[in-house]
Image (tube, rainbow, N blue to C red; front, side, top):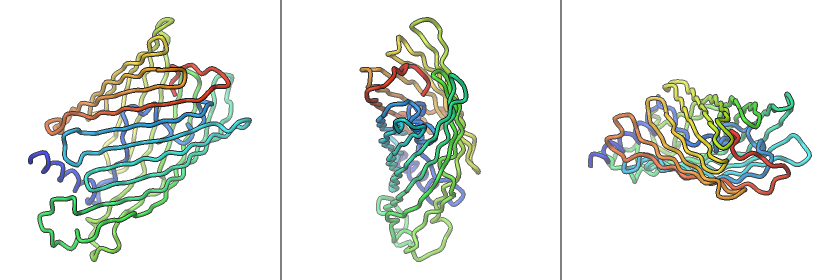
Length: 310
């Protein structure tokens, strides 16, 4: 019962408080899911790459977020253009949001080893909220009589990505439009029915260091800035063994610590898992977060080192 009460409080805060920015999908293994936050990444691996991820956050907490991602990106042959598309499904208690994005990038050589990509993203969002799933104190309250059904909102984004085989830095704004979701059919104009989606700025960077012939060290960083919300920073450190097995740790500033592993099953297939343990008081109400992913890449025209950052 305690968990359910806390879950309901979190949902109400995240869905109905006008001063609360809408929650965007959160990933521990962001370094494998870069197109979600930076469209300039599309096609940068120079092969067709298919990616899938499932994240179950705050296990044991009623109404906790569950996220599923499927994406594909590839270069266009004999050109400097890359393309990608992704589908993200987010569920938080009574709220379900589906986002479909299309990404385009253009890449130029800045030196013999570094390239610079510019990217554009177009996104379509569909939001649904089923108030009948809430334990409402007063079921006759007119504010909860009409569900939010397939509220559509478009968005656009952009990013830049500078990279080589062993390093990268990227800056992106995946959603430039600040959108308000509300149910026009509900017979009230209270601001408590507004869900705000504010602009999020992402800065990411990473590098691969050779420790010896068979061991490499790959630190990376992701910083997220949202107006009206605390600064979010993810720091990770991975070790790659014989270009096949990866193990590492991560820290989300004032939020969680994580353990990560990944295994190169074949030349084309990479699978991985991450576990997050909360460092806040929320840890008293859940047993952590789980995240699994796979990535499959088709035949290559040139060999791409498996351990490189992106």
